[in-house]
Image 1 (tube, rainbow, N blue to C red):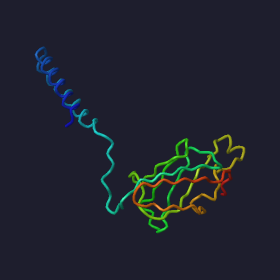
Image 2 (spheres, rainbow, N blue to C red):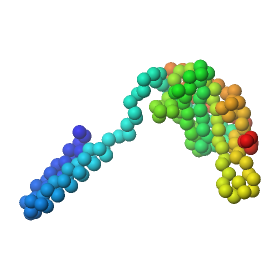
Image 3 (tube, rainbow, N blue to C red):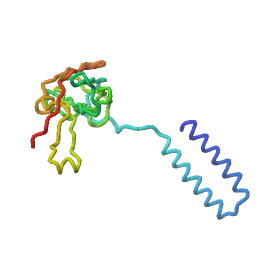
Image 4 (cartoon, rainbow, N blue to C red):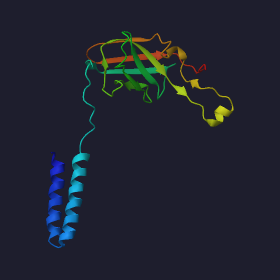
Length: 179
């Protein structure tokens, strides 16, 4: 139990003792129930973000970050996925770039980092047309060249034990996505 929880409990007990001297038995029971309920919320709500337990078979993960620019310009919201060359993509790392084109990768289960190995790096940023654009016949468009998509990318990295930082300066362009 951390210090903050103990502090709240002391305040609640003081209030309970102080107020209970001025109330009837029915009110004391109601007040006790409220204090108990409030205490439960304090205990449950003061924990940090907990990841699920480490799954069986999860290999050692190493910090992995990618910075990508397209024609020298960083793009936000590009989905970056590392597809293992070994074929086992259960723990494939991925992430979304920030406005500077930077992303720290984590597994599909939310664990930060990437297992050691050789990967094909894929990039995707799709523009979904809104209703008006659909009426005008605007197709779904890739805001970066399709040659970086999962089925076509030739970009590779090798994640090794320790910190891994990779930089890509890729071609720019937009292409309609074939149906």
